Length: 431
Image (cartoon, rainbow, N blue to C red):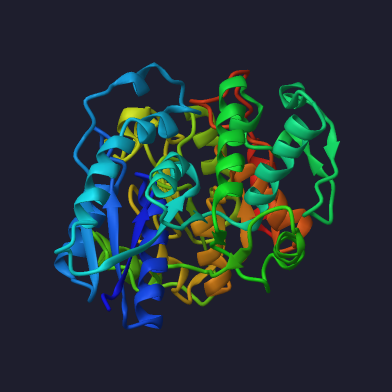
């Protein structure tokens, strides 16, 4: 009998891809008769996927195949806003995914297709699995908290006939069955409250219910109440908590810069330095950058700050002249205590004994890494489900302090940009 092969379909974003690759490694490690093919769907612009895929090809994994899906001719996704663009892009590639799967079902193919594992934002691919009578499972690279909200908002919309867009800019508190605490509407992901975006989340919930099970990148000891509540819900497919799926031995893309950063940390006392990093796409307007700088200077603590440009097109780049964005004389006054970088080897930094605190955007991978290495977190979410993650860490789990739980990314914000004053930032770092 042929060995089983499982197709993994990650979203075309670095964090999603890394998490799913780590899950694939678990499948391969646990069962020698299982192989994995991971379908790579790429945006026309780089989202950090290219360099990671290249690193995978340089370090082959047994029974693990990378297969790039041909680009779609359709550009209809360009007419979508940032909330719905990803799923529209995936929908445009469903036919190409199906063609690849059909090629793998030929009689001379060396393995038998046993299932799909599909990212929660790639659920249109479930239609291919259903058509070909192949079992499908949905993978949430985020935690049980986001999954809980997606399911609850479907319940409010389709079973209680409520218009969830009314919660936008609302002070309402929601009773979510999978949370101990009431959840403020202001921490719901913006996509859930956007008219088009909410339809996308409903699609995710409906497709999720069509699957054989839901795999979540979390663990019971972290999100105990949410995970156990989801597992006990007989109205949804079985839920499996299989995290944390982390690449804690990740190689550094820029070895020379990483070595320089770690050498700087080596010179600092244990648990003395605060690390500020807001993800690959995290950035702030100039006024906010100056408030952060003043807080760091006044605190007197050593700091390592990953500071990025503010334009969407340039967020993966660093500033060419820091004096243009920072307070006058800041670099000279903090030369002995601070270091500003454009890119951070986050795993290596968080694992370093000199790091005693992490000011984070609360992306789920960053949260899991901070928990893994035991580094306290001060939350400063920007977009996506980060506000919800921050709320969960501070209020539901009591594992973090908040700087501003409902802060919105200045590029995506529809209203006036909120500026957090330096005294507030400084007070949180002193805890």
